[in-house]
Figure (cartoon, rainbow, N blue to C red):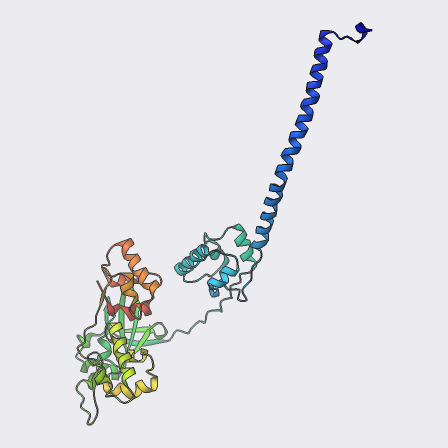
Length: 356
């Protein structure tokens, strides 16, 4: 009986090995079950949080206006963009002046692929109207002079002046008629006998309508009336004019100081509360004579100094200073025209208040 129940050494080793395998298998199952029970809550939590984030990205408010040029910071925020992304978008828009197409808009690096897909379904640029083709209207003109910078003395000699800017110079003309020829001769303008006659499209020229009477006012004596040099008069002198009280007098002098001096009497209309009708009633008593303009040196000024001028906004001031830092000191004020946000109209307006 004992011999029947006994095992050989090899059988005993086999039985022990079998128990080890069975025990190892159960230990393995226990370990895997414990590991899965620990990881499951984390996996569920992460999966849940990602879903919420994805859902949150689509909880946006679409602006009523589809043109992104009309969107403000709040509109971009409601679309799900961060403050940093909005700053990048605004700086990019400032560089371009405005967005003109989706392709141009999407080239901003603030947008990822998902942003572009979302905006592609929202953004809509208005169709530009067909350009109006103006008929060529050739007129005969007397060429007066060409200069590198705007000439503000011509309007003191001639009633109506036409000008255009090309090749970095300003070209001035008078209509070729008897009146202007006579005026040209009487003004003793240099070489008036040899003025060149040219045919130009009047639609391509800009016009300066001056009040030649300003020159006459300098020597005009009107009984019981007061003639005022607007660049040299203080508030007490301004108050002597009908319609100018203390508040308006203070505003005029304050605005004059901000400008650095008036270039033209018509600049008075830029002062708050000076209406066109009030200006018309005052203009015959106003003139400018021998007045120097306080100029800002564009090679040494800061952005803060420039932006204090009424005609120069922060983005213009920043562009002027940035251009100087990139290209070195300005050699000519004409270089300002290389800055894309400074057009001819603005250049003519500010150039007399700047110097190099």
